[in-house]
Length: 152
Image: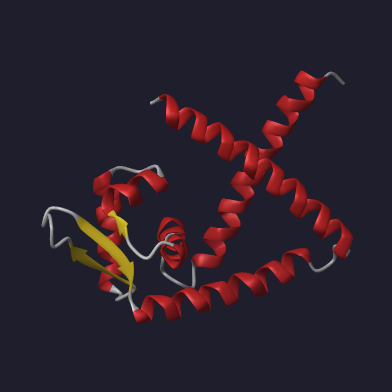
């Protein structure tokens, strides 16, 4: 098989994995009442102390209005809180609350347990190989995205 066809097949499989992964996340999130996007932001806020609303929208690839609606829901459940900049009151940042950190840990533990269920039958060396491959794919996609963002 020629390289071009292999690349096309790889892309199709990645799209399939993406769909299956989203479906699995949706299933896992049924008990949390938090959307996939909400969970993605909770995990992102673990590493970013604060994020501006436009950064959240950009990170998720959604409109500012959609990001605002999602943050409203998380704020209603005391998972995040908004703060206004002292220098410019128009700038609103979002950060995790203490309860949000507790929710994050519960979600992390649940996802860990589910990952054990999904991958339990794989040998350790195969998991390690898959991890390396997924990391490479992630790096290629990150490079591609950064290159496209630099062009804008």
